[in-house]
Image 1 (tube, rainbow, N blue to C red):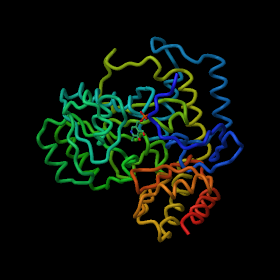
Image 2: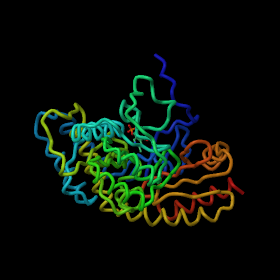
Image 3: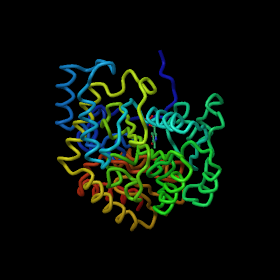
Amino acid sequence: MKLFDVYPLFDVNIVQGKGCHVWDDKGQEYLDLYGGHAVISIGHAHPHYVETISKQVAKLGFYSNSVINKLQQEVADRLGAMCGYDDYQLFLINSGAEANENALKLASFYNGRTRVISFAKAFHGRTSLAVEVTNNPKIIAPINDNGHVTYLPLNDTEAMKAELAKGDVCAVIIEGIQGVGGIQLPTSEFMQALRQACDEHNTVLILDEIQSGYGRSGKFFAHQHTGIRPDIITVAKGIGNGFPMGGVLISPKFTPVYGQLGTTFGGNHLACAAAIAVLDVMKEENLVENAALVGTHLIEELKKFPQIKEVRGRGLMIGMEFSEPIKEIRQQLLFEQKVFTGVSGTNVIRLLPPLCLSMAEADEFLSRLHAVLK
Ligand SMILES: Cc1ncc(COP(=O)(O)O)c(C=O)c1O
């Protein structure tokens, strides 16, 4: 059987990882400034993570959501305390798209409406509602194009207020920092006006923190830089450090109803063990603070490169925008300098390293980037 060929691949076979480094099948080492697309939060093959998952799978990998699973409550307690939302409720699921899918369903169950506001360049995943609120017609199949969504320019307060004033908007979904869209930041003024308008019109505010959350921005959630509290927050990627998992953090104003949401795999024992190990390490190694510290250093240093048109981001979620396509630069970084980076569109290189990136590793990246750009 052939693989369904939907991914353009680099000709590299990564077989091993440790911290912020990965190795290919020929033993070549690479510096990982991509984190497997913002997924690796605590670093590759962290010993505590390996041990916790290994012990759990030897004991019980999976049962079902029809019995008590105390590990789920442990994830909820630890996560609530660490992120500052201990009064919220947690629904566990398997991926980012599914987290958004369930957030949008919950919003619609809540106020009975069907219209959603999303933003230019937004990415929220590939399942039916998640892809419909994604601003990329190329990946919206006709069956997903159901007319629920109005896309507005990011940070356009007047347009947002005018749309919400119609009184029929079910939910607004917005990324803490846009990732796929090229590291675009919502302003605090916009977020505060959005919070107020959602309150006035009984619209549910959903913060997609799937890429920008879990410490990446230098606070637990990127929206915490803007001084608001959303009604629903979605997480995935870093929550399991590579173990497929997602979560929906739900404000106390939503009342759970038996059977309204559900999943076979979501919140299984092994996934919870992974999530608990991630939270242990994040706390023990102060990874949110590290992301803030090392990220600030990287952003300051990157701003000194005259070849880079603009540097955007917070913490270890950084976009470097160039005046011309970056394909060549990215190829040289990978094949000559042995550095993995991400991309957005044609002109932006995205940095999404593990949150344990050290100052020395950041400086090593800067010198390898210098070698390419000089
Ligand atoms: C902001 C955001 N939302 C949702 C998703 C979808 O997550 P998943 O691929 O786990 O379904 C992504 C993935 O890149 C993302 O960046």
